[in-house]
Length: 100
Image (cartoon, rainbow, N blue to C red; front, side, top):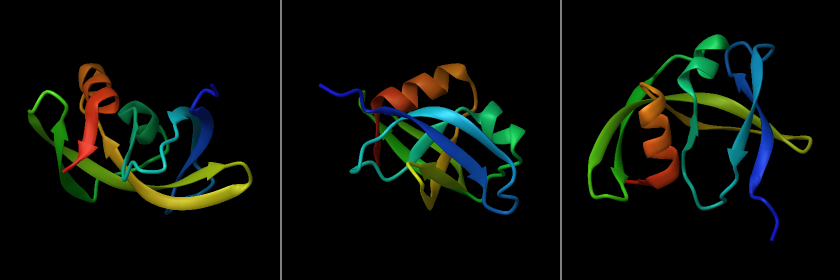
């Protein structure tokens, strides 16, 4: 079975020359992406809203959300990205999240 992780170019929508490459799990049915906040801060991504997430354990979490360009295999799209608060939340959300 093929690994669903890809090296994705994540760019600031206001300053597209600012970007980082991250390994992301690609899931066509997943409406938001989770990228480590320290990487988003490095390229100047700022939160524009909040989002309520439901975790697999039944808990809810409120997190900041921003917008970035995603580049993969010569294609680019824009989409929401969850800004995590610390390393523990990154693992909690990216491993167990679905959109609420």
